[in-house]
Length: 133
Image (cartoon, helix red, strand yellow):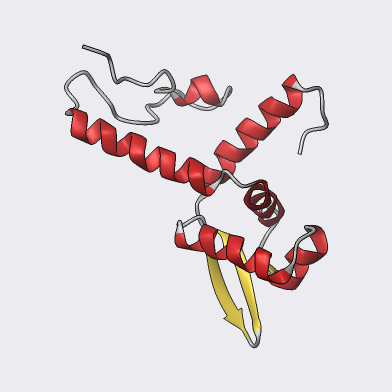
């Protein structure tokens, strides 16, 4: 039988300096269907974050909420393309939004996604000897 325990079970393995606590509560007694669901949910989140444009949006919104115009000033994209990516992130529960007059402001509502993006992008920048984002 193949072990379904992921090698990334512990948060400290991913994020050095963070408290050691289970990232996913998977044990030897966890039914396969439950662990499969965890992996499916993780794969869906990685799919949502798989577009470089979405990572740029998340990075930009780490500094606070912004409207579409402010995001377009920082990120080279067309308005329809930006709106499509914002909607994907919103539907996935990564972003929240509020309306003020005709403007829609977006903000990060899932801090775990930000933590994951920062850890991954920082590690990639270190390994590639690039400036950290």
